[in-house]
Length: 417
Ligand SMILES: Cc1ncc(COP(=O)(O)O)c(C=O)c1O
Image 1 (cartoon, rainbow, N blue to C red):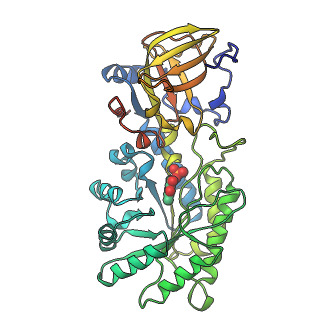
Image 2 (image 1 turned 180 degrees about the vertical axis):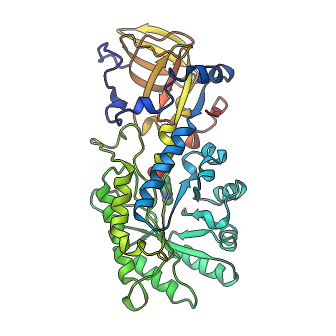
Image 3 (image 1 turned 90 degrees about the vertical axis):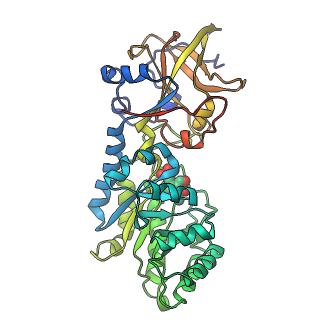
């Protein structure tokens, strides 16, 4: 219980809200403004539930698209499926033109089932079975090989196959200030160059593309710039006889900070508009990208597209005073919001008529309704809660539902508003 906290005003910034971009609360369906529309939806369906604002989803996608269009002749946005499967299944991003980024055979089959043609699937991940690789090779997906062992397997499978194979290489860069990744072929120790040379030694084969995804929690566009520079260096000298390496795609991954709270791992947090990250990448790769017949620049955003487009709505089951604060129990559980370990939550209280409670706030602990003692969804100030109120958790779209086990209760439904 956060007993050290003094009662304060509800509009004071709270832990999870200190680093939010201006206008954050105007963007997600202002529940109050849209109460005529959302009230019936919320009263028709039992909480807890996830509520998706499709307008924000589309706007985030278009922001990335606009940023890419400014600097790259050809580009593609491959939505990282694992960030939120319900969004993938809604087909909304696919209808806007998004490709699919998948990291397992299961996700690959999901993408095909949703209608993505092989050519518009980027198949990443450290574990791809032979049968899954063969299917992806046959269907013309872009496979990013993770390591030397996988490369040898792909080369062997390719021998037996005469389709539209597109095989690229995942590479990694050692950058100051960024935790090293365990995935991909190292650019520093010659592993990536050796894999390129291995592919070029096979008659009729060359890497279709290069892929680099920075390890998470990076807010500095400079890190993306440096990563792109390392990729550009390999392109400049990694080709036949130390010359230029020509590829059909350059994929700089995802990892762009979402509109949401500061990760707990970071003391400072200064997320920039998405265009700054895209410019940092394209600036380094521009000699290759400027040509009409140059490679397609692929980005694989996940959290940027979905985080703030989705809220988690729970209902207050009981609230009681405790010390100088309150204990509030809701019908959700922390397993439905597992990212509470990753970043502080942004919680706001509404009456059952979707009017925001603005009264002065109390130090509050929000407990989930499972039988676990440590089922705590939020600690921080909240106005006094009343049974039947809605407690809404903002920026809940990324990774929560895909990482949550079905534990004790059914998985919360996902509503698209
Ligand atoms: C290879 C790859 N691409 C894209 C993503 C999406 O990252 P984010 O949700 O940070 O944009 C991930 C996430 O871990 C990833 O591993």
